[in-house]
Length: 554
Image (tube, rainbow, N blue to C red; front, side, top):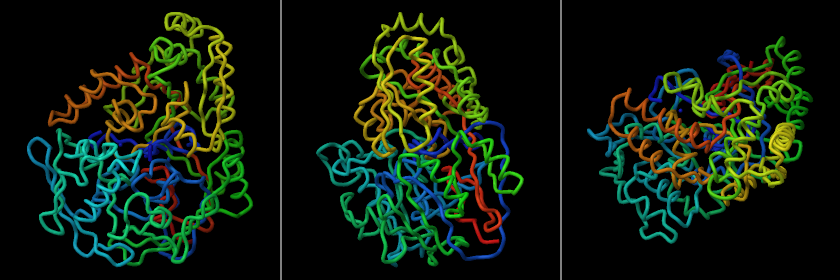
């Protein structure tokens, strides 16, 4: 999930929430508000059965080779289980998935995963080491044009396989000494590589998957997770996706008989989703910002209101590679011209917390509130000074890209008003459905973009390299700084916790504080409404989606 998506060494962990609409990880397509931490979870019962109805937007993909945002991740994580999984929201402990145990060598350049026997895909085929080799190769090969292949950048042979056109057909760094031993050789040290193997792109696939262009598999993936595509159906684009319980799953079986995802149109989706909940047509929904106070006062007394602090960030993505914001001073001018607190009060009814860092507070010791404290605060006088230094002259047009299926219109209108008033620029709003906006950002066709990040895995690194590393596919702003890249390489090496912490914090300070390559706006807390009279065990998982593996009927 760009996610999002979607995560420090393990004591400090991050999920990601954005102001509606992962990468996944990820960027993310959720409505989020950020504030204090209150985790309201409906206690689970022992009952089983029922179909849980969820409203979502049209996913960009549900096939693991290119699952990259919140809507697709919501579906994908029900269908597939990778080498590891994450347990719990507060601690996010890593648990065995298909891998029962794993180990690494002294410099963290070789990892060995020992797989459980008897794990199967829903077509009856056994999940083996070859299933992972096939899945990773299928996603990374250049002809797949995956936007999330970068998670495997450090696996030996990545460059040759990912080239366009590819100069290899296999990963030189992957091997299977036997069906239940999966060996991964890396081209550089990464002592947290195991945490990355819980992201969708690292899922196994059956021999029937074919290549990434296999539309049959794209729309009805055959996975190994707790649920499977309802037999005889497939993803009905812009309409629905239906799942049923996978009774052959190797782990704990879900209590639900199935899940029905209703796909709502982009325009006005958040309001339509909430209305569907109030009408009893769905069991779980996001809340339009303008109706937050009303929803809270109505549903919290009934036990139907979920508030959960997540580990994520909402931010403005400037185009650092070209155009009027290719200068760091111009980007700082934008940040200083935005009154985060006023927008929080006027648009979000005080439910957000203004951000001064990209790595959010739940990361504990990795969090540094002072990352952009000098430029992530409202100061229109200083904003004009930086605009002058950065060549951002009055009358300059700035294209502001945002997804128009997430209820962001009041937010981007507020940004437009403040930037035009404080800097004299002309902001051209450009709204598109989230999947289309991601494509636009991939092409660099924007000056500013509304963005949110949902971590793919629990490392602070996941807030830095994917968004700001040179060449990373989710680095849509095109930021590149060799000193930043060197710090990322350092923190991935077998160093002490204190050295890793310093390298991560120095990297964030450089890219966000000095270079303003990402402009933090708000930390995240998620709010949802659900039917507590019908369902128990309702919470939010690592990817900000309902805990469908624990939900059951009352």
